[in-house]
Length: 150
View 1 (cartoon, rainbow, N blue to C red):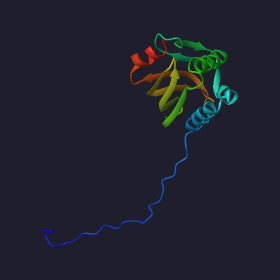
View 2 (tube, rainbow, N blue to C red):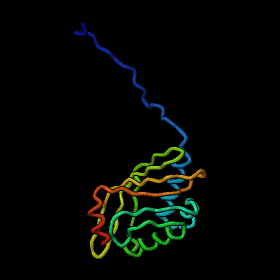
View 3 (cartoon, rainbow, N blue to C red):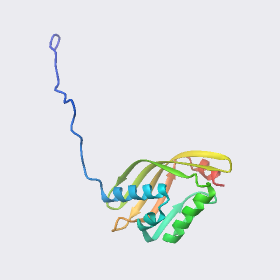
View 4 (tube, rainbow, N blue to C red):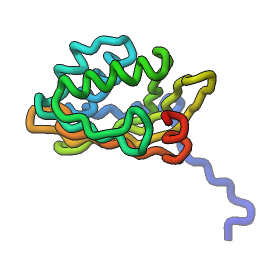
């Protein structure tokens, strides 16, 4: 039936770019990650609810549930101290709706002469103002991360 026919499909040379507005919670998350990378804890703090709860699983020196903005900012100081300021987050993608944000990231740090890079999904529950109300992180290999921070 199609033996000797040639079919040509129209191809646009420069296909139009799909443009969609980013959800406000994606925008806030990007601002927070950018501010964190720059050490701008004032902006990071502004993007957290006063009664934020930050869950860090495992049994290492940074593990625990940090309750309240001051406790979470204190955790960031502790994380910087434990890693000699080497902790970094590379954001791969951020997905969000009105209540939740999921950031797919690769973390890296050095500690006690060792270095580690690990993938994680950071999940936040956003309050009505789009601020972080609660945070969890899930890593690809929790045992390795826990050992690194032990």
